Amino acid sequence: MPFANANSLARAVALIDEGFSQRYVARKLGVARTTLRDAVKRFRETGSYERRPRQGRKRCTSARDDRFLVTNVLRNRFTTAVEARYQLREVRNVQSRGAAPDL
View 1: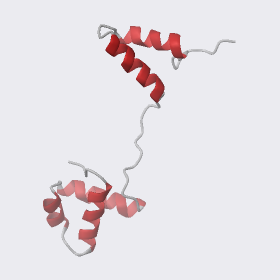
View 2: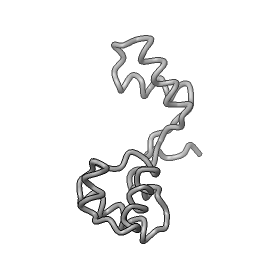
View 3: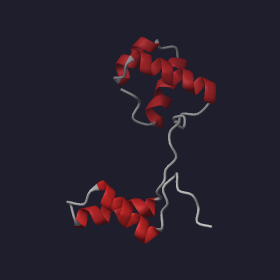
View 4: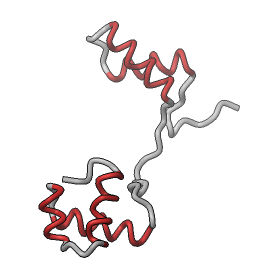
């Protein structure tokens, strides 16, 4: 189980710096020893308690588009994903990734 927040990781690093073993600190905080080891290693490398940004596909929709989709699907729960996509395209003029621009 990963750390709940940066404060608990900071506490773990402080305990280890005080001389407690990783096994003791992991047991005291209720996390796996390997989780603690990896988190402390990440802190030592980056100097930050925050998690690293993950890789992945870039978002196609904004927060506004997401709210629009949620609102419309909640209004009509039988809307399919394809219908919701077409509604979003009509209202927000969202293009799919592979679409060529209109010239």
